[in-house]
Image (cartoon, rainbow, N blue to C red; front, side, top):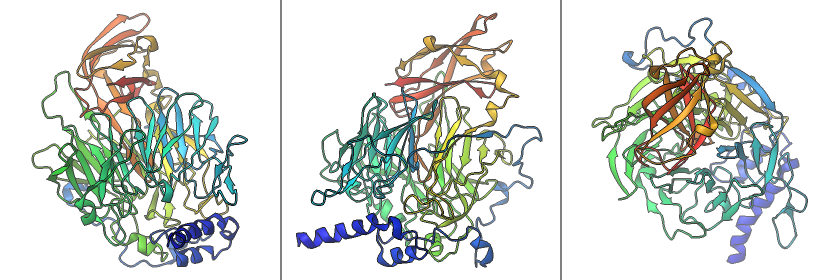
Length: 608
């Protein structure tokens, strides 16, 4: 029996391992679908097909977003802004990231972006250092000497190879209190793994393949008020669990009926959106519904109304963000928390239909809900364009950037069409109808398996995109190794003169909760008013598959601003740190000073 089981596991892997040349056949994807090589949900479209094929096929019932109530749909929404208003710019910074950035996160202290994809392909565009290979088969001696994770230096674009042993395909992650990467799950042998990567020079991955109780493939990892982590969901995992201490293993998980109820024929509830609310509970959104989970009692303490319009999680793959949390010098007991969910698919069977070359128009609506209200309700509005598989990144100013993804289809191997090249900025505090603004488009499609990272200088690093089963370059949408940086409008030459500079040796490196702290800035402005300044703290996101895990921005309360040297433009700011780990989980944040809408380069600060 043991030999039979071993054959069932090994044979598909051998098949995939030998596909490199076979995949170049135009009909290879059909055999992969027939044999279900990777699993019942991993279907393929022809990677060498025509990206314009959807234009020639009449699609019945392709409604996209159904008409919204009049209150959510202003008669003349202004998506374009003023004629001369800055719209941002793109810069190509690297043509070879080594690995296609399926997963990405900015690491504190070293200012490098960790990028990785999957080990299953045994191929990338960078090899491990000589003598460092992954042993695949003890009997045959087969090895994999390619690198599957790298550190990307955001200043020099140099890449440092790192060695992975377990498969990180469709995994999750976040930063520990000390700023180190903690990653979970993945494919097959990596599904129960917890991984650790420190930021020290020469450090490499530490992996514990039996740490988790359930297999976590397409799961979401969220940080808790005490700095620990919860891992929610995954394929066929209607449960959650807490990451154990390094080297230990969980004996069991917690059954989560909510995930079972929100799963449908095409799933549409993988990579659930998980946000830590300001009351210490977890807002968990899957498919079109959400609950509030108390991580102390492991009980659902609230059910939220369903979000109308469609399906929002993988493979429908919308986007979600916890909107910036506004703090004051003296906060009330209840600190408001608001969540926004955008895009996805209006069709429950978008994945099934995409396997038949039917690519439905994605949703172009968003829902906002204040989850701390006594009677929370969704308020919907319209984006400038439909978007599926996009990223939603919080900017240092408190605005939100939407980018990447497609206008049609859903997540999957070749299951989307019509790249959405144009980012949009969202102003949460603006009036309805003036919240969205379209920005300068990129020229590089960022489809399935792309990622985005907010950088210390306020730019956005954009990488990845691989809708093929492996590294394939002559495909409809080639495996993408180019890396771009997007400069939002606040970095335009017309406004950059407002940019303040944080004086590094007078900025805090560590702060406690609910304390006053000082920092000093230098400004070219003739006069700096307290009303023109805000101090924000940004927690770096772990981005993958349209999910930005643990992303968080705090707009701090200000106590005072004093001009200490008007001639040199030196000013001191007294700010109030967040009140608790419920509002700001312990760890590293990028600290920004924003003057008249233009952010400084950040400095790293640790709160604990």
